[in-house]
Image (cartoon, rainbow, N blue to C red; front, side):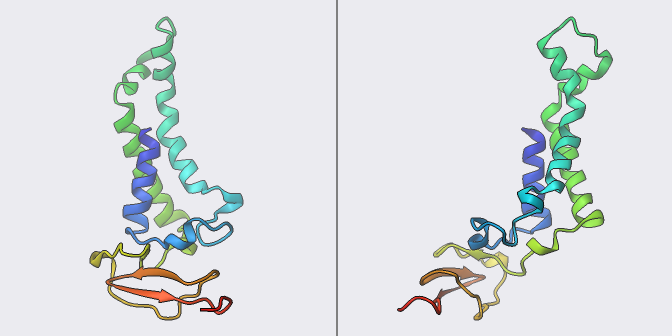
Length: 151
């Protein structure tokens, strides 16, 4: 669970800086759709945090299994996995392959969920695929009307 938590925490707080477009999270093939639906950066960071602890995990199941001193790392598996995943995901996303398509300038939040620390600019030209919906951007809340739906 440590590598999974480390990857999620790093992505939300360090890479996206708490700025997500909530409307895009639940739509396929949009800004949060990665290669074949898999974020390879997250997968690699998870494996880097998880694989070194496998010998210790195997030793915890079968005590007669000789894994040398690798079982000692398993004692701190959660903290080790979390730390390695955070560092590796950060390095991958900042130096090797930045996920530029999923970075947004301002957070788009559900109605009534306004957080002033996420920005204060209001974008008027945000398009919607469906009917009228409330969208909070920065400190202000706006109503977006779709051109396709009668209001």
